[in-house]
Length: 176
Image (cartoon, rainbow, N blue to C red; front, side, top):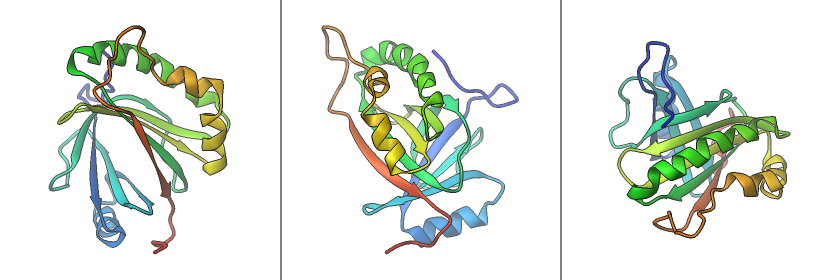
């Protein structure tokens, strides 16, 4: 079981808040020393808070950071893969995924990746950040993408279908 530790040996966590662009942007600006990333799509906005401590959010989605590659940038496109896994199959899934996501880092257009273990449900998240949408499309059409997406052999380790959401990170104002 791999867990990312901070410089003092403690676990790192990711908390995700949902809300309007203006509310989340204010929250982000109010805490400039926190590691936060504001991302949006047509369905709404997320504020990502990565920390070793507690969160500033009222009711966030909570995750433990299992694997971290690279750093967030101020501009890019984020692909969030949500993967529901049965409780009894978590060790098998984690073992398979932690090594596989390291393969992404040499792919053209790659910026950063995070593998997150859910703390309050059964859905893991594989988040990858890319320079633009074209790089995401190229990655999703690659053989590497098919190798990274965990396939169970003979049994169904998943508790439901996986799904993906795409978000945009930009220093510009809300496009709505």
